[in-house]
Amino acid sequence: MSPRPAPARAPRLRGALSAALIALCCLFVPLGALSVWAAYGLADTGRYVRTMAPLAGDPAVRDAVADTVGEQVTHRFDGTQDMMGPFVRDAVRSFTQTDAFRAGWDAANRAVHGAVLHALRDDERPRTGPVTVDLAPVTTRIRDQLADENVPLARRIPVRHTEVAVLAPGDLDRLRKGYDVLEVAALWLPVSAVAFAVTGIAVATCRRRALTATALGTALGGALLAAAVAIGRRLTLADLPPSVSRPAAGAVYDALTATLRTASWLLVTLGLAVALTTWLTGRHGHRPSPDAPTAAAPRPTTRAEA
Figure 1 (cartoon, rainbow, N blue to C red):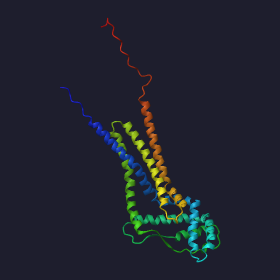
Figure 2: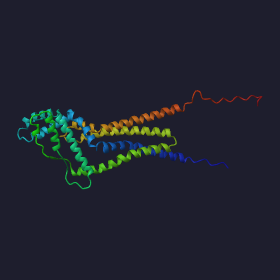
Figure 3: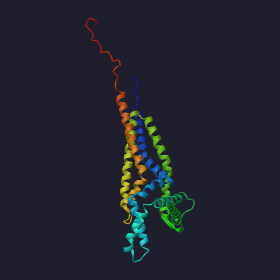
Figure 4: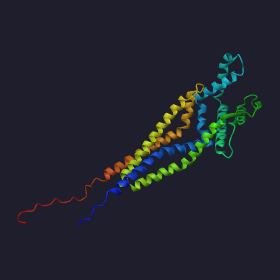
């Protein structure tokens, strides 16, 4: 009685399991990059201030600041907005080109980011009022910079503690929930992606093919992440109110997402490089060597030998 052939279900199950694990890995890679960028890139005050600092020299940002401050100043003088408006805006535009403006810009970004981050992490007691920031440090920084530039009467600039609301209570509750999710996702999504990739390649019947699929999926995930950043920029600018400068908002968006765009293209480059290397080594690795012995052709049997 001949033995029964081994069932072919085991290789199929291994292939299906490998494909599922690799698909999860390729899904978690862009999500993990997005979570790490949001939880650690945007949540560090020093890194945030350094990212926003170059925007103090951006023409669109300077124009937006000049228009906003000029409008606020001229509103205090009833009946003279049309006459004083251009002069006030020109004066503010000139101020945005000074070191004092850059110092105030950094101080304002540090104060706002610190206040919001403290509110997000301080979840022991519910907040009933908005998140506010005190502008006194900003005024102090500008006053000291003007004094260093020998501006007359700079030391006499009064420093008043002015609380400005930067985040409503309802928005804070939603941001807290999202921030907690991002902190967990930033830790576990990259670890899970690596674990799924290693396991999926290990259980595959053809590991070279599984490695190629993982690399191509990583490159695809990076491309989708880059596309999501571009689409997010368009949607963000489209939803802005008419009073907000779109060029300035676009400059801010580009500055904040620069690291994320770099990470997405690194994923694309790394994935394609690994896939190409695997394909080339597989193609040339199976080519027979010219020095390898070849099997001799069978010699025909003559009638006498038979």
